[in-house]
Length: 333
Image (cartoon, rainbow, N blue to C red; front, side, top):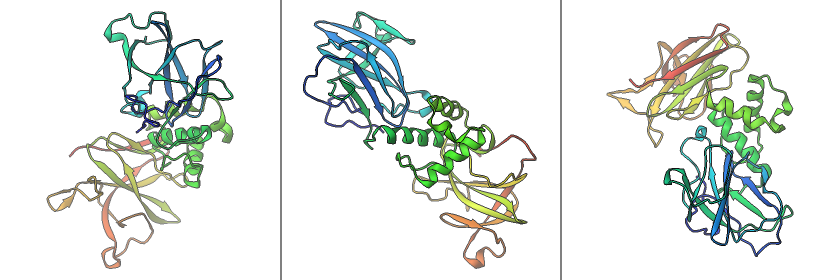
C-alpha cells in the first residue's frame, strides 16, 4: 500500500515533497514507487486549470512533463497504475476534480467536462532539485531511484510467478536467482534487465503468468501452499512450501529439465493453518505418497515418514514430456 508522507491532506498514497517557491524552470516527475505509473498533471493559472497526460514512468524513472518554464500558481497530479497490479495501490483521493481523456491529451479548460471524464487530482508544490522543480512519487519504503527500479522488478517477477519475495528493493541472492531464472526462461541476455524496455517485457509476462515452464495457478478463494517433487539422481526430492495466493500463479524453480513432476497443494487460512473438510485437509494431489514437513523442507527419503516425525501427502504425477509449458490449476472442490 502506498502511503502519504509529510501529511498531504486527502492524497492518500503519494509523497509530494514540499519546498519553498522555486525558480521558474521545467517540471519533472520522479517515480520512486515499485509500480509502473501513468501520471496526469493540472497547471492552475489564475482561475483556469490546464490538464495534460499521460506520462508513463517505470519505477525509478524521472520524466520532464513541462517544456519550458513552469508558470503556474498551483500544480496538481493524478496517478494511475496498470490493471496487472490488481487493486489500485494509489488511493484515488485529492482536492480537485479535473478533466482527463483515455489517450494522450491536453485540455485547456480542465474543469469543463462531464463528471464521467473527471478524476481526482491532488495539489503538489514541487521541490527544488538539480533537475529543477520536481514532484516525487513515493511509497512507505521510501526508495531512492535505484531501489525503486529493483523493487519494481521484484514486484512484477512475483506477479509473473517467480519467487522474488520480499519486495524491498534489495538486490539480494534470492531476487537475483529469480531474475536469472526469468531471463533464462525468456532466452534473454544477462544485461536485458538494465535496458529501457525491460519493464515492457516484465509486464507482458505478468499479464500472462503461465507462460513457459511449469506453473501452479490458484482458481480458489483460498491461499494454497504447494509442494513439488522432482526426480534427481534416481530419487524423488520434494521441496516446499510455495505460497500460491488466490487468483495468482507461481512458477517454481525447476532444476535441470525434468520430464515428470509430482505436485501437491493444500489450502490454508489467514493464520497459515490447514483448512479441513471433515477430518481431511482440503488438498489437491494424488496417490503417490511422499514426505513433507511443516515449514521449509527438502526431502529425498520417503520411507516411514511418520516414524521420522514427518508428514505424508499424496502427490499427483505431472508428465511434462518435453511440453514447453504445463500448468496445474487448483480449483474449488
